[in-house]
Image (cartoon, rainbow, N blue to C red; front, side):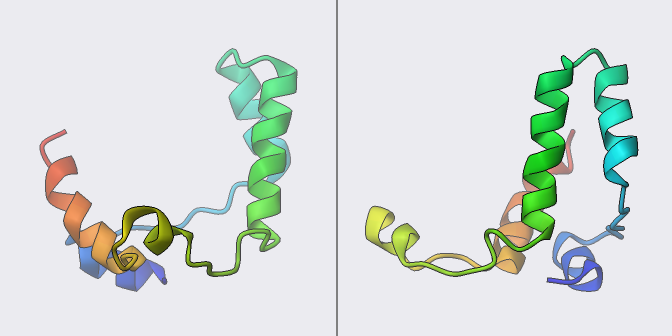
Length: 85
């Protein structure tokens, strides 16, 4: 899903901002997270960017008995619930 598609689904502009790992790490530790936790969070997002979860599986349907939603469908569903915050 692109920024444009997500923006359209939720009804306002969404922008992707790439934050380099070193800046993310500095920001997290600057907020008071322990080094080990900040490093694990940055490592998890590094893995996601590398595509570690870039696959589909049938576990949503097997667990819930329902077809999974697309990201766009979920965004349209959740947007009204977040707009009052």
